[in-house]
Length: 509
Image 1 (cartoon, rainbow, N blue to C red):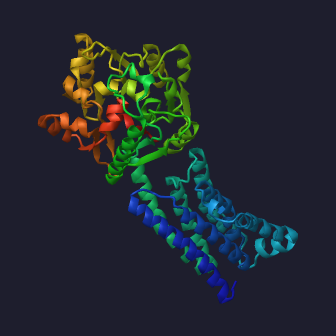
Image 2: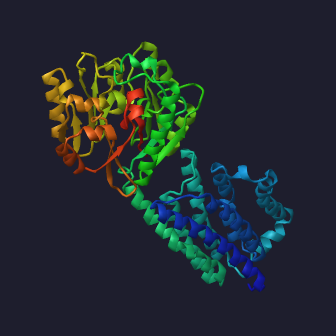
């Protein structure tokens, strides 16, 4: 079927808009080295769909109309989840939503004529039409898959399966366009090149997903000396609230900048003035995420720390991690038993071992509950300071990386328990870097190994911790990853926690 030149130009414009969207998306993805889902991609998708609706109608091609109908409202959903509709007048959104319904009304108004013109089109045999519809179905079902995948994670994401279906559908549409002598439809699928590239990029990202660590950090609003935790944390020192908040913000923002400069994905959440949570800057104490899709919520010792389990932050974590289930252990608070996540425990995630030192914040009963439900074995021990007080958190005493472990032997009371700890660490193939009591007091044991988007290992510690280490210790640790030392002296002094305490891992499932 021949059509006027202007009809082909209209179709070419629609394909051009689609082409522009993927060019922008591809450029942004190459720049960040991971598949991006930018707002402009969905805005141009919506605009291109409108143009191609009209083109399909003028060409009397049901396969095109069908294809555009599948993805249209999905484009709108993505625009909405990205918050872009907040920037446009309400009537624009209404008109956009009504457009396909107007087309549908025109069809229903004279369905026999539509059936004769579009379905029994003499220029498009039924078998060819069905093949074209099948191609469009495969191509557009990628949008349905994207919607389901993104909806579960409460975020706009372009997953690997989206690109696989895009490639298969594009091939079928090209074949259909060539047989149909619709050069606009065939040429318009040049985006298959970018779909293949996105698929390769997505697969590469999936392979290193377990290696790349997202970090969640909470930007404080009322950071300060927490009287409710001071009794069990001798690292805390009193300071005026105003000064503490001021310096904490400077140090927090500086740490975020250093992490981002080294391409470590960081999710920053703003704390709220009410309720006042002076320790919110240490989010690793109230939750942990796991590769099986579990988000664990923990019982907290201090009443004001329990307020940190904010539903909005939990939703953010679930969206970033792809959470499938929540294991809520906070009911132990009613029984006066506590376990403060990766503060109370240092996890060997591969070996499924949870190391924990007893303290008012670490209950053996809750630890057993966690291990039973998450499939871990526990190694429990006593560790005290020179005053005989239990060390409040295990992640001050030790850290575990992929091929190394940092351990302060001086604080472990029982030689037998120390032997069990060292034996398990050695059997796991890790080199033990031993630190002194004074180094522990400078937070040299408070270290977290992370990987950036390029797969490079980084050992995150405070500047205080690094300066306490000997040249030999630094050389050994540098063999396991680049040391990223961050200056957080005021946070350490007032809050009693260091760099590792400020970052909570988000393990994607």
